[in-house]
Image 1 (cartoon, rainbow, N blue to C red):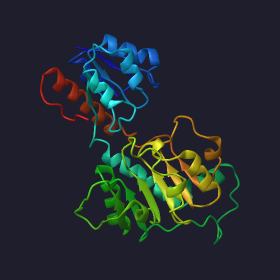
Image 2: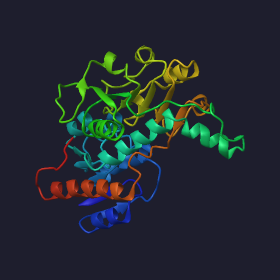
Image 3: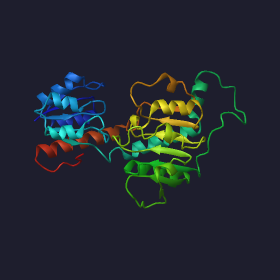
Image 4: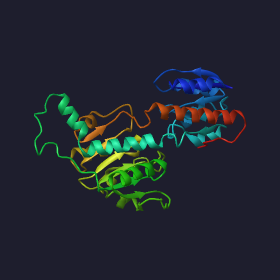
Length: 314
């Protein structure tokens, strides 16, 4: 089988793929261009894409009878792939859940603590040479221990964040989820409007039409003025214009973001805000995790090639 790997991946993953497939390796950090998306469908049996490789409906419409038969996505999120359109043209789609859980939950806690304690603002001040020394009322932040966290989306990652908050910081955990859940640790399910009343709101939902702009002017207005919003899901879950307005007016106290609506483009107005903690999509940026993700994608490809059930079908 001819396989195209669309992005630079860890060496171990590429070696594993080459051991089984005829691999074309695109060792580049940027997504596939529109022409390359279509060429991948026409010229290869299998594709290992990732975030930013926009396999939208129009791409499949242009290649209605593709040679490719599987998109083994590198990543748990697959909102860059129109899955119904892919299936309509005969492609299977897989992803890499599980491998990313702990690393992404760790980044959620990093953002939560940084936003609460104004860490990025303080570092900028220090590096700019503006720190005049310690004094009792300098850079007062928000206490985390014992506060309430509202987790929006209570899948693997949401629950991993909740465990860290409860067991690590003694926080009260409330959550909103589309289906009823009874977790094995203290956490209470609420409607979205009530979960948004937490001191810290963490977004851990998948990106799909139902969650697009889930956080908007209306839902931001339901949050407390002392609250912090943390987004580790996908950028378009948040209406970025509405969030910027809420931060500028201090309608909410702060935000910690690892993902953006139109990344890698970051609005200048967002970057200028002292109460916004911004990371460059570091959620799974750990070698062990990226290797595990890649090996899971390769395992899905091998299962497909062997005619066995896919490990992680979308």
